[in-house]
Length: 201
Ligand SMILES: N[C@@H](CCC(=O)N[C@@H](CS)C(=O)NCC(=O)O)C(=O)O
Image 1: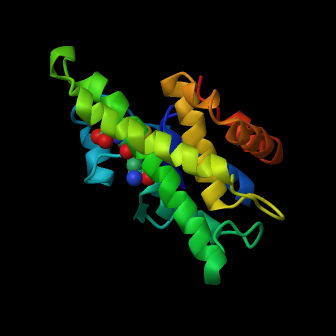
Image 2: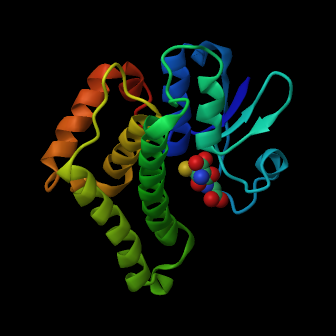
């Protein structure tokens, strides 16, 4: 399989951690893919949204986005089960994943505002709106950081990648007011070595 990839992408990181936990990382070739140019024709051919990650399977299927790729990888080996099959556990996992993806989307939009627009076009109120989504989610999670029994699942992986991205691109400012989540991320990193192995530099 091939993974259209960048080491800085938190969505790619979700996939790499999932692949490591499922024991299939050595079946995936990481193909460096540049999303910085306004148009990357090679990427657009594989995913009309021009976003990474994209997984190209051995039989030629193109799978995106990161959630769907992780769910696909979860089918390749029985253990550990990262997406509960049914019931409230499944929807708890998917909802945590959606919340953490929403935090990531807001954090990425803040980066893109400054990357793709000249400074005199930055819209302060719009950036505050994105920041509020992140802050409110952090406060909500801090009240009861999500737990796991045997092993972290897809929701936990996504949250770890969101917090990692806030460290990487937003100076780790979330840490001062969220000690419970700081401890939670340390615990996640101890349980999942692939978190440190995929840390962007
Ligand atoms: N919902 C997508 C988001 C993927 C995404 O936004 N990836 C970024 C890189 S971190 C990207 O490719 N951006 C290029 C663009 O938006 O044009 C996922 O979960 O895979």
